[in-house]
Length: 231
Length: 231
DNA sequence: GGATGTGAAGTAGTTCACAGCC
DNA sequence: GGCTGTGAACTACTTCACATCC
Image (cartoon, rainbow over all chains, first blue to last red; front, top):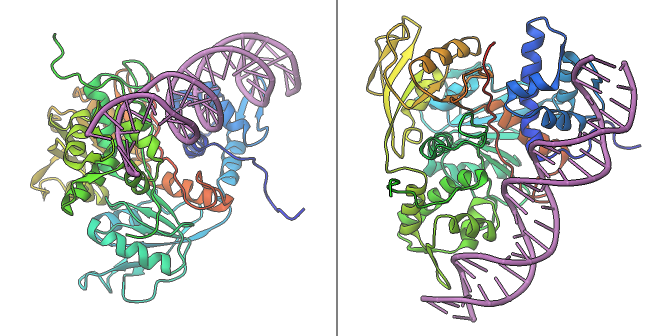
């Protein structure tokens, strides 16, 4: 057939969000020299029920052993495949302020296939400096081809930058600016908003209720998306 | 009655995550001098359907006007009340590296009632320096009372820091470290993981499918929680 | 024995469609 | 006329319970 490596059906949105967590748990187990783990333990660590873990993993095909749990290596590998970690892709980061700098220097951001292609800023004091091994380019320069654009610019600049990125054929944006973006259909925008995370935490604290009774929160973070034409 | 300001019933988890987005939209409208907005427009900007917007807002009581949409001021105010923005609370940040610095200096993090109480680190080169108007304290010092603890430490240190914070009676943690935390029941942990956001974006790109057909993604970010006893 | 994988049941969230009010 | 607010239908996700296989 023409499809080279379509092995997983469609995974649900919540499942996709949990897989990286399971993978991280598998890696931790691996680092500690352990070989097997069961759904109960994964569930405890990830904050979900064992049944949910099993359902999520069943979506990747049969990868557990009845009676003996999951092989941590297999788990790690199959999740990686499902999430497309075997393919690598280019990322450009716009806005090399505190946050942009923190991201590109983080050992946890550009992993699993992500490759830093270029950095951009508008501040003359920043342009030309070397950050994470890359010379920061002016935004007036042409944007290099990439798969994902990361926005770490002030809110008022975000819409313009998004426009530039889309014109440069970058159709997946990760937006850390507290600004709703308007982009053409066909462009994916994913929002990350720190203050919203805090607000959600506070809501539950004020109201005494987390999803798991009075005790443990097991809440989903948020990142909404908008995409429309026009202003 | 004993409850002074319980006006909203229980809001659903997805709703809680969307309210801050609506509020931001309302603020933007307000800044531009506009007074009213309808659910259709909010939906476009937030990336959800008008019906969802109306349902979410209906949970805060009757605040729209039939035929005329929502008053942006009222919207802003009621969402703030529902999320508890009228109460303020203390936040301590542990780990004043690139990320910690970026967070406390961000104009988007400590807003809506959040108040920075103290900063902690273990690096002698950082301890004693002034960041965001606060002298960075050693982690050997007693942790000041606070409502929320923010972890921006390396993964290997996160569990220890969490323990310290819980012992200091801080029972709400926002964890930016790529590390699953084990905490006593009754402590809420909320995870934020940048690499997971990227991974979700890439999954959809690789599979050509976002929740809204082939065009626009409207995916939820992730932040899972775990809480158990023992190691 | 023990833990996976899964049909079936249950629950939560979204969308439809329209009555109600401005 | 237009847009909100909401019962009813629908869809998605989770949890239960157990047959299945190591």
